[in-house]
Image (cartoon, rainbow, N blue to C red):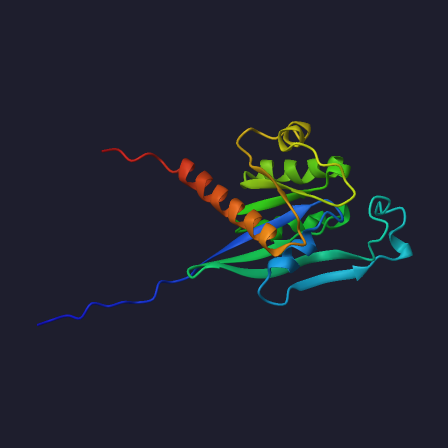
Length: 198
């Protein structure tokens, strides 16, 4: 009896990536620049009620803020789909981070070199959760461009954590950041597997 070879289509793998960082660093912009679906956004207007609660001095033109999450989807390859979850930036919404990070393989921490102090809490969070993350320096027009090793040193990053430069408004730049965090998460997974014994 002859059996015809089967050519079953490969199952697509889906994975979850978290986009984090301080208030106004570009998380919503990154998700919007790469998502192949209309991104889900939970934006609310910045009102007078936030005075004294949120520090708006560094982002004076910002009229909205994420109050729960951003959600988008990107197909990186025929068999790899990324689901993107952007975290809220203000401290009062950080209680949601645990739920947003559940099941994620990695995270991108976006930093603004003009406000590096806002980066330490997200970095500490992912280190404590032992979730692989990369740092993406969002290059704004009006900010100084620093050498990446200097930024890594200022953030006290472990030497194995990748740091890249990106423009969250640019689709290709944002895609490169997502590819890099996916690669890094897989590297970390491979490193954590026990060595095979022959």
